[in-house]
Structure formats: C-alpha cells, structure tokens
Amino acid sequence: MAPPSREIEAESIASVRRDLPVLLAHLAREANLGPGKLLVVGASTSEVAGERIGSATSVAIGQAIADVVLAFAREAGCNVAFQCCEHLNRALVVERAVARSRGFQEVTAIPVPGAGGAAAAAAYWAMEDACLVSSVAADAGIDIGDTLIGMHLRPVAVPVRGPLREVGRAHVVMARSRPPLVGGARAVYDPEEARRRMSADTPPRRDA
Image (tube, rainbow, N blue to C red; front, top):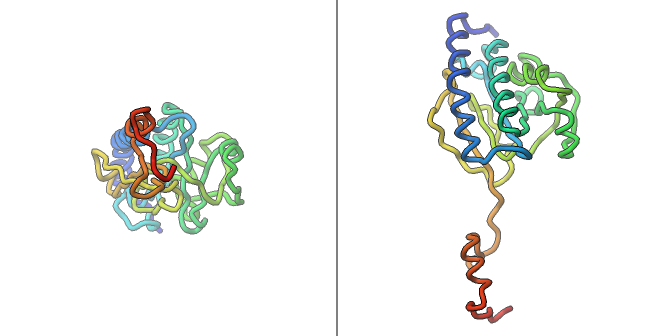
C-alpha cells in the first residue's frame, strides 16, 4: 500500500481545505444541522488522492479531513461520527460523552491507517475522549469516496445535491434524514392542512 506522491497529496489537501467546507455548509443548510444533531462522515483518503479505496492511505489527507470536519462541527454545534473502514466493521469514532448520552454500544479498537482509515484515526486523536461505537443513527451524512455510510443514517435518507461533486478526486455523496411518513391515503403531513381539518368548519369524520 503505497502513499500518494507528495504533489498529489498536496493537491488533495488543498482541495479538502477549499471544497469540503463548502459542501458541509450546504449540507448544514439542507439538513438543518445544529445542536442535538449528529453528522456521520465517511472518507477514503485513497480516493481523494485518485486511487482505489484502501490502496493509498494518506495520514496527511486524513488529518486535513478531520480538521475541517471538526472545525465545522464546533461552529455548527452538532456532533460528528467518523466511520471506520470495513476492517473494523464500519465502527465509528465519536466522543465518549456523545456515545453515552445517545446510548451507543461501545466497541474496543483504536483506528489506524490501514485498519480503520486515516481520517477516522486522525479524528480519534483530535476528539476529546474519543471511543468507537458499533453503529449510529445520524441525522445527516457526507460520504467522500463511496465508503458506504448508509447503514449509519437514520431512516428515511434523502439525497442532498451539493454545489460540488468531488473533493480532490473522490466522488462525494451527501444525505439528510427525515422521519418516515406514516398512514394511508387520508394521512395529513402539511401543518396548515392539519389546522384546517381541526377547525370548527370542518365536518366530523364518519368513522370518528
């Protein structure tokens, strides 16, 4: 597993610092990210450098991704979970206080490049009292390099189209979540319609 060249690595880090904040800001608006919300992040530094996932891990690119995401999370006031790679069963790095407050199942491992991923490993050491958990149910997510974060999104996941499609050379997918719509043909989802139905002018339902 050879790291990317210094030139490619430098270009990739520049893209992370330039483009990732733009995408995160867009996702924050679309998903209403803020206090009490959880963002899941999946990132392949190999894909950012233009290589196949898992084949060219870069600690420097991983550090840049973690730095940008954590700075965003501090400003937005949201919590963040970094998904590890398949070697750790896609466990996630979170702050221990977040894991305990949300009732997440803690698991034992320390992510490293090659067994967890460079971005998750960087986040582990940058977070305050970090730990690994087996799964989360996040309110929104960003996937840098097709790492497959869907298993950690709260249903129902809704695609978010951003102003950019790539960070470095990695394909980027974003999503927000919404509560499932329940009911049938008579179900109401619009608040104004619900108020109208509750008004005195509305005739009572026959099956009420």
